[in-house]
Length: 392
Length: 78
Image 1 (cartoon, rainbow over the protein chains, first blue to last red):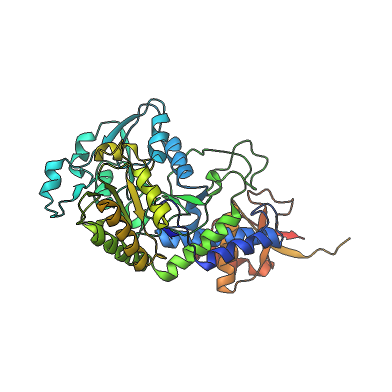
Image 2: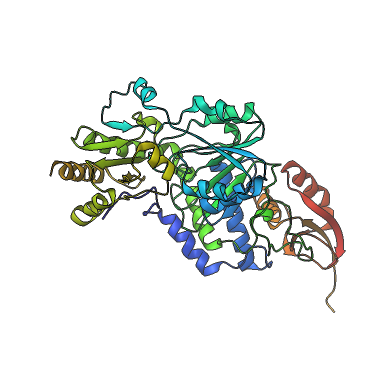
């Protein structure tokens, strides 16, 4: 199988990640619930994972890295813990349902959505890539018009999980800073794949998952919180500390980490973060870009193929979504798997507003997503398969 | 009855802070080890750093430099 569904989960993990999980399964007790070797093994492993992730993501202190099960939990935690009725939040049409649904659920919180650039503006970009039907680039110049007196935050993805477009976070951060808004970033698609420096970029809350670009196990993720920012916890309970207090402790990271953590998974995530620090995120990105370019070059001139996303591939993660004629994207995904052994994802990708913006609500899109461990030969094979299906 | 000896005990607010202490001491070759918090101390975290009473100033200076937040420092008969 050629695996190009890495934006969902990276399939191939570094050996050190597998080794760390296995070792943890053998030796790990419960962190902070005892002071014997097994418990300390857990505490040390989790602490070192915090340290590595803080370094990787530019978080000032390890205690500001909070572990969760995934980006969805992180976003639920941030969104349900920072707002109250009467607040206004600006977000974008690029968001995943893990941002949209927690926002829709908030009672009495007003929402505004930053749209994508209109077609005329897209043409003005002067791409020359006539087969790029729609770029899905955000209309940043409209941010100011969405502002209200009660606006509290800008919640924005660092990269669309559908188009792979990387958000201009510098621009978003400048807007947030100018109006004293919280900047909450969904880094599900970028942590490990695109350089991130939370402090330097002026991010208040950074939500990530472990199983995609960080090359860790599923069931791991986290939220990095700017020092001094207090978030109401999503859950309270066992913390291993202050046992006789009726209230959950407020010290970070315990404040947001009730219950036993996924220590075995975090062992793998920590090893993955160390591997990324050694390999270098820039290296990872360069590799994915090579594969993306190779694939795009192989399909961009094909009659009947519509590509989505920013034609400037330097502003993209390792994702190319496309459609072939008016074929159902789910059928195309299945043909690719059945006839060519290529695993991709069709359908809606939990990004309803992005599909509506691109006009692909009914058809969906076929998403190819590359990882550091894919090869040029695999990219060529996938491009050949797309050409063959389009020419049939 | 076990013979007791005087020890320096440093308590922390969270497990993470205790882990930070251990990691720092290990890197810098500083003395001590983590122990379960003695019942004489009311502290957040269930673990504490145990060292010799004479090592108090050395450790206090190290914690200040590394921004490690401790809850309390005690000399106890353990």
